[in-house]
Structures are given as structure tokens and as C-alpha cells.
Length: 320
Image (cartoon, rainbow, N blue to C red):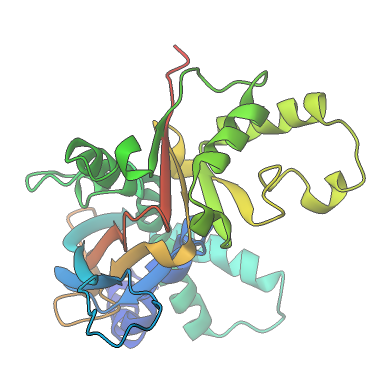
């Protein structure tokens, strides 16, 4: 099949599978987003309000003792429209995918190959999103995924600077020593114990770099050794959390200065899911042997609330 035919056929498939391809952020970066809450169809900004109330039942005294104790605090989930032009060799990709699919089936339809090719060329796009979920910093003049949106760590730094994440708010702790294989067990326990009782009563996740998770594993074995419940928890949960707080190491946390303890509902990610301004197209480019994937897609993340009942942040000390 010549390049012009490839371009035409794949472009038809791109239009056919547009909605599925634009939903890929909800499945393609599954390492992280399975711990988060999706907001499909968000273009640019969507405000999420949280109602905080301090109402209570008082002893009856026959008087009108009404008190206004409720307030609404808004959080804005902002998505940004990103674009991508990716070159790929259709012949090489087709051969690779054909061999892979053939191993699982004796009959392979051409439509299956075309669909597999489209999803395969999206892999690098999704991998970059996954790697920047925490560290990305929006730059209107940027040229990389790391400059497309504001990641969770970037938002954390901004809110910390504004005083919204602070020890006085009971949602922040500054560690006094770097985490290593000699102290990780105690350090992660301390972080969890500093969190609010309301957060500790929920199913939560502690997001850490892989190095911190590995240090915890090593220190756990040294500190606790072999105990009956060790097999049950498999060192995936913070000791003393009764299996409520799972330690989650993520690729995107590699250079992070923060450890976040929060719930799935509190981590929001927005994407367009095929709205009008999103598009995917395959066409011939300047390279005589390759095709271009042209993509426009919305993406962004945000905390639903910074309240101590849903979020606790620990700032780590650099090991260098």
C-alpha cells in the first residue's frame, strides 16, 4: 500500500474513531488516572463548588438561634487546548502490529490494523501526559507537554505560596529530614498521622516517587520483619492505617518535592472527549516515507478542595 493510500485510509479511520481516541486520557494514562476522577467535556474552565457547613443540633430553648455557618468555596478546573504533529512510518508500524495481532488471532481484518495503528501513534502523546501530571507548568509560549497545563505539584506550590496549603490550615507538613531506607517507615507514618481524622477515616492514597516507595519497602522489612499481616498488606499500605491509605508510586512523581495524601474524588482531570475544537487527522507530510498525526486535544488537572478533610501535603527535604 503506497503512502497516499495509507494517509487516506487512516484519515477515514481517524474520523471514525475520533471519540474513542479523544477519550484516551481516561484510559491511556491509567497508571495515574485510576486514582483520580474524570471530568469529560471540559473546555477551558469549569468551576466546582464545595459547601462547608458548621451546622449543629443545639438544646432547644424556644428562641430563634439561627446561625449562618455555611460557605461555598470555588475551585476551577482549567483545561488547555494542546496540539501535536507526530511523524510515523506506516509500513514499519503496520508490520509490527500485524505480527503482534497475528499472535492472538488467525484472522486479522484490515480495519483492526488501521485502528491499532491510530491508537499506537497516540502512545507517545499519552506517555508525555502521564509523565507531567504533577510537574507541568503552563507556559503560553511553550512547545512541550510540560508547558501545556499546571500539574498537581505546580498547583500545590502556588497554593502554598498563597497560604492555602499551610501548617496553620492543618493540611501541610514540612519534613525535617530526607527520606531514605533508614527512616522511610517512620516518616510516612508521621505524614499519615498528621493528616486530619476525617481524611484518615476515608479510603485514601499517598502519592510518592518510586524512590520513596522503595525506601519504605526496605525500611519496613528492617523495622517490622516478617509478621502475619505483612502478606496481606504487601507493604502497599501505610502501617497503622488499617489498610485505608495506599502508597502509590508514580512515574510523574520522580522529581517531586511533595507527598500528597488525598482521595480519588479530590484529584480531578479534565479532557475534551471529542468536543468541537478537538481534532485528529492523518496526512502526508514533507517526509517522503512518513505520515503525520495532527492532533488537537484539551487537558488539565485540579484539586476539588484544599480542605484538610480531603488533602494533606508533606514537603520533602532534598537528599542532595
